Length: 438
Ligand code: GLU
Ligand code: MG
Image 1 (cartoon, rainbow, N blue to C red):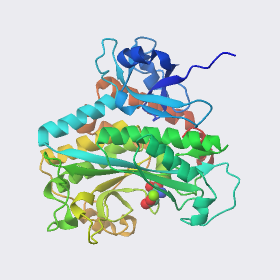
Image 2 (image 1 turned 180 degrees about the horizontal axis):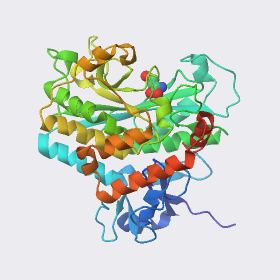
Image 3 (image 1 turned 90 degrees about the vertical axis):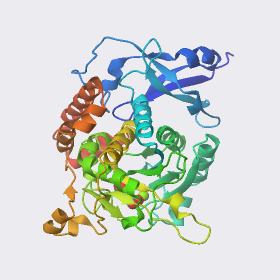
Image 4 (image 1 turned 120 degrees about the vertical axis):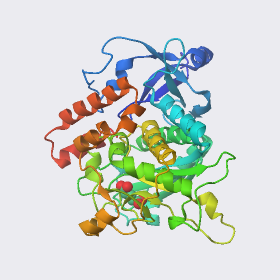
């Protein structure tokens, strides 16, 4: 009997947030760690439906390397038929330099710019919602213990594996939607947070498959169902690594710097959607009364605001300054986590750079406020579909300049191709297409 070699994989996450890569026998790890595996530039032009957008900048030309980051190594036994062993990778040119269009490298550059220009760094965490499809179990009420127990041992097993993989899980909870769950993780430096978002999605999908289910992170799996959101939490740290978000004397208890950072995000929010809610189906979720985000505004504990100041616990023993963070709600799992985060960092940085004033706090559902009040609070409805979001992006000099020209061209080509591939589908069919992929 021949023995199976264990495979390890170099992975990268592309513009449509699909994680792809190449595997090698683990015995050859040393060479691959040093020089990576091959990769192809036009892979970046894949749509979610595995059809390449033809008008991408590279066509059949060029070669790249997937350079594994040893810090991201994940190896778990007992899941699937062989150990799950992978590295998240940067895309590099053949001489080992970062490829200008690598989303992970782009996030690193954005974080460096923030630190160099302002001295600030960030902590971040991605909160994911997903639904289990295909489980043969009785209905259970939203948020209930029964909803969690009938999935057993999915929850405890997921958290144990995440812990083992160093993903620092916080909670597993049943959500409001049908067969919907949420997983939260401890805050970490933003690159690690984005890496963990990728790893979490892969783990959840593997674990669901183990039980014969499918886990779907699609923004909507049914037109009239509850959306699956990805909420990105952000918290500024000063040059000494101390919490820099909170000032109880100011509106919303946001420090002056945090207010400016939030102002940058709110100003660029319509254009940011091209990076954070970048698929046609994203806009079935981003509607009023979905607790997702239909408006560009800052709210204090308001789940209809695009950017929400999260609650802090003030009981004895709790440190409000340390907990203070804001949550960007207009993201979903069709967004590349590195690009979404890079966009948020650069938008926030622009607010700091220009000394923007903190936006007014919008503490009730904007869709229920009269037009005049929305105008006086400077609240804008977010783009209602992907073409509008792409137009806002193309009209935004900060964000267009943030992406190298080839990446920008590729993003627009991929998104236009993706729209053409699903054009004319009913909301039901759109959901079916996306839940089969995400
Ligand atoms: N499911 C909502 C969304 O699509 C979020 C609900 C919540 O606040 O957790 O973003
Ligand atoms: Mg939730």
